[in-house]
Image (cartoon, rainbow, N blue to C red; front, side, top):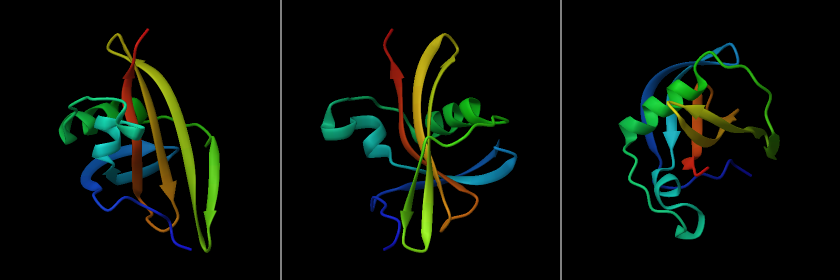
Length: 114
């Protein structure tokens, strides 16, 4: 079984040092970010805005994964972060998978209401 990913991921270049490792690309599930699960949210974050937010939220951070899932010979570690940035609170869910080293997968990113 392979790691399951949406067909329409957007892959962009970044420079992030997370958990003492360098990452040079992020995969963005833009539809999930802007429309939410079951289309319950409508935002219009651009790829560039997501890049800036993810870099600001993650760069130089160190923390443990919240979950791990095996996909046959590969696995993914999933991270969950709620953090304030510029007076706004954001929820970020992302993963790191063994089949794509050096890439972080951005699953969810949205602003939380107080």
